[in-house]
Length: 164
Image 1 (cartoon, rainbow, N blue to C red):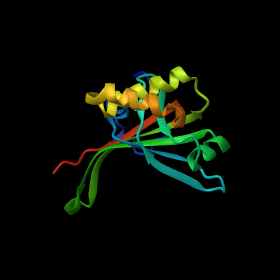
Image 2: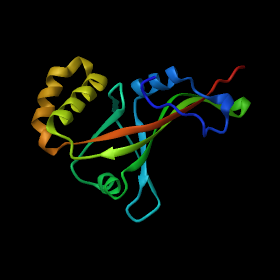
Image 3: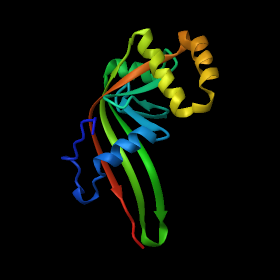
């Protein structure tokens, strides 16, 4: 595993997600929820598209200003959660699931080369068949696109398999 995987604090040790499955979920997850400290106190969580670089960073893109960026400026420490497959089993009063929680630190002010690389990774993940058009669009809107690197500090994962 290339990410720091630590399930030591997970209460239900019988539901640990294997490290390989956690890495696969981080690579293929459709979206994640970034949870931060709100400017006025309390919590603030927002779902968003992301891409993992295959090593120690997650990249997100957004407008160059807004509530999320103000919250991250206030406190760069954040949590990022990716939920994979879920299946509600009403008659059993339970849900099968897989999820990971990433403890991370947000970094802004990235060099242009890293920002463009992050956009290339995002395009490869979400629009692999339209890379050429996507790169033209990314270049055209580059000045109004912020990229935030979430440095991965630790990852934990859980899953529940429901057998009928």
